[in-house]
Length: 313
Length: 320
Image (cartoon, rainbow over the protein chains, first blue to last red):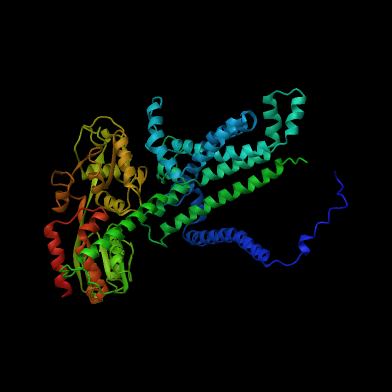
């Protein structure tokens, strides 16, 4: 089988073949397509950086990072990012707590336990969930889930009309398909021989799933989780609608409302801010902070993916 | 953002259709001063001033753009004071103002020999609305509102507002911090624009405020009167005692200026030099002629018939 028979003509060297102008044109088009994303990223960084530098000419980085009040749009102005930062971290943390178990659980089920027919039914439904616009999730959280949460709340002070808890929960639900779909791909890509080898050593299905498939797919799973966290961190409409726009003080109680960084940007951007005022520049300072966060997160994810990668022949 | 973009697109589309229909109908109108007929004008109109009046002039400008697409009106929002500063320096054609011109601003205008006219284009009224379960009071004084809303206020229960009120948590909703409504409310209640307690629930979306007040026990919020008017079955409006007894918000009390201090007239100022330019004069004529639609689009309280007559005659006299 391995050696080709003598009657088969040698494959022509594609690279030395006659020139085809169509191919050259396509190469250029493809290169342009690749450059567009680089150019966009550069453009975004530049358009964030210039106003951010202008902002920090007027506000010290020390105040920005340490002040516990963010009130650039009030008469008494303070420029501390902490209230927005803490709200962002709380909402993201809640969404991760929801998204990881549900996302990885459904990935494990789809990849290891579900029958072929069940998978055929479930995967498209999961992907429909990923296609729902986030503004719909936002109003779903605000007008449907939050009233239920408030009516079921056991005693004490009920959650606010808008609050970080409901925003985080719904953001978690929004992220589930991303995590589940990517993690399931990673698990399905684990070679069947590995599973069969484990069964041959009398492993149970559970052991195969958790001790063989899961570690083997860890690189892809980590990538799925980090992508999910990034999406939650950058999510805007749910945070704006369900989490609220209260920006001024640090709020740690998730049943109260507080504005994430993205919600502040959206809220301030909707209003009547005069362009080039310091108030307007705050939008870019917050945007840059958010950018730094997602950048760090992506760097970590690349590290982790490399670290956990397992290569199978 | 996506949502509002689409809505705007729809509104714009509707405006195009309406404008087309209107021009079709009004071609054989007597059209005394409704724009300069079919003549195409071109040029820039520079407007600046109050962030409250800004949306009104913007609404007029976008309607006008359907008729005269080559006239480009730019509406800035530097605030009433900022607008007058530029206006009396001859930098802009029209100044949007949420209060009459002050004496020192008049002096500045006189110094640059800029003569102008003042036109009232709409009535503004804010409503202090509460949840329907706030049944123990119908009226608050301005001092009580200030006690609730002033910077650093720790009032979070109705019994702190008035000892006679029962103990009930007071949850606060209000305008977003960069809206004209926020500036206006803080100015007349707390004495300084943008001076406010910071721990309330702000939203730029008045519908969310309506939902929040309607859905939260003991809640209070403030927003433009027209939003209350559309939701009277969900909310209760408080009367406000500005020193002359309790008055509730309504179109009448806003128009006759008895709902104080939360109602006020809104102005535009036009300089003599600007009204000498044909395209600016035509725009103001259009603004005045279509004032009902403009006011409705920007969600303010309409002018009374008498106010409209005054508006018309004053500009007629000024441009003559």
